[in-house]
Structures are given as C-alpha cells and as structure tokens.
Length: 247
Image (cartoon, rainbow, N blue to C red):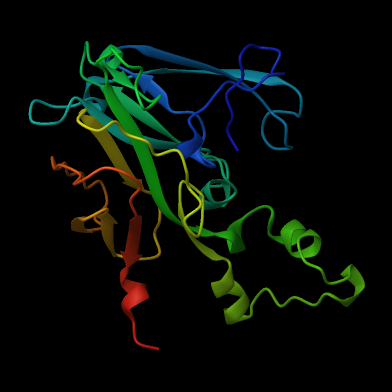
C-alpha cells in the first residue's frame, strides 16, 4: 500500500485521516502546480527494495474544475506496472484538484477546529476488491486460515472460492468497519465519491436518508448538493445490481 512518511528517512509515517482505510495519502494540488513524490520500495517490484525514486508531474488545467464544476474534483491514482493486480493488492489512492485559490479553504482533517471556517472534505472509494488477482492471494490462503499447511487444499478455479474473494469495500474496509467520517453540524462539506471497479454496471448509494442512483459510465462525473438530515451517527451503504439478482 502507499503510505506517507514525515521525511526522507521513511522511518515515521505521517498522520492520516482514519477514513482513508487502505488508500494511499490524498494528493492535493491546483492546476499548473507541480507534484513531486519521493518513494521508497519495501516490496520487490520495479524500484529495487530499499531504494528510492522521485516522480514529478505537472497538474494540467484539464484536471481541475471547469466553470460549471464544484471547487474541487477527485481522481484516483494507482500503480500501473501490473494493472488491476496492483490495484487489488492495495496500490491505489486519490488526487483532489482544486480551482485556483480553493485548496487553502478546504481541510481533510474533520471536524475542523472550532473558530475556523474551512470546507470539510472526505472521500470514499467504492470498489469490489478482487483478491483472486492480488499478489497476496497465495500467502493469505496459506497463512490466514486455521488449517495446517499440509492439509490445506485449494482449487483456485473453484467458482465458490473465486466468489469468496470478491470483497465489496469502501476505502478497502468491509462490513461497516470504515470509521472516522466525521463532519460538523451546520458546516459545508464536500464528499467525493469515486469508483474503481469493473465488475458491475450499476451502483446505488445511500448516505443516511439521502439516496442516489447512477449508472457506472467510464469517465462519467456528476455533482450533487444536498443537506444531510439530522445529526449523530448514520449509515452509509451501497448496492450493485448483482446484489438484487434472484438466487
């Protein structure tokens, strides 16, 4: 997984919002700015283990909000060495690009401090994590069961086994275990919802008593402004069309 560190010793991880789950750090920028990331490899792929590499990008105008868009737009970033296998192994995160002058008006650290007036911002990635394609599928099968290794028999082609490895996740968390999505009553907030799955064509999202449906269309983007009714703890969930199929 992608993780941010406090300096180039890569010894201490930077503080991160609890709601990020398995996602990498949120990269924030405005158009025409540059992004530089120095990364150290702790695995065994393209950059040799223990060595570092610095990536640099320019943020183009087209990546930022247009005249009719909200002040910020979210994109996903991910490793592209092995495509979907990298994503399903956890190498995924988000980039938020702001209209010029807007970045300083937003905070990912909600609830915002009393007396301040930034727009609180959170992001949720809805994804069916196909662990059949993960680099860790064999290790997890061997090391995360109570069956002795010599007695464990796994047929990777078994449909039931493959189905069991499709994990319906929000920011990588399952079964309602994503925490830290805290917003302040009476304050404006921006909630980015992105998807990185290819298993279905239709998704239905419900947050508290607010309900939206949208077709999953490539490069499709939409925005909505709505109040979240009431205060306190609420339920967020999503459904894909396969959840509604008859047995």
